[in-house]
Length: 253
Image (tube, rainbow, N blue to C red):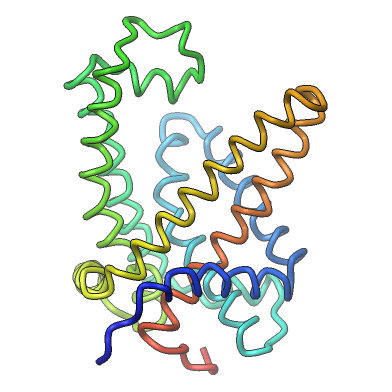
């Protein structure tokens, strides 16, 4: 099998935009359904904080399935989105969510171990003034370590959801194939990842500039709209990464 070129990573991003432009309102509504579901689940006592993490791969696969349907020109309804799931697939996807949860716990542990948990408190409180003992140097070190730990987790889970949903792979096999597929095709993934990082940096810079030019309220509203559009676009770009490597799924699925 020939390796993909590095520029394919950029093609994946453009492919996501193409899919988004075909059914923007349907995809955006699906994204909001997911956000509302997260809010409702987070309100459940005791387990509300971990449920959104566990179901994240379920939504990832549903979103990729919708993008697949758009790609082949099939009209799909919200009801049909969920009919593709069965108990076995849901359980395996939740197990992938458990991998997300393990990474989250490791990230919190690294934060407390390296710099006393300031990074964790900043994420939870969103206010640097309330940090128990600010240590920017330690926070950057912790952030770097978390990123290093994140890479293998991301590689193992990137294709896990569609491999479980479309290839009917087991949990362990899906993680294995996902990890080594990303290792083999690392060049387009590097371009893909850094393109999105650069894009979100530009979004933050634009938000700051708008805050100065038109005021905080108007800037916050525009930034919210742009964040939603870019987030949905990014989710749409997941499907081309799968299609270009594993091929288009069976149209009967």
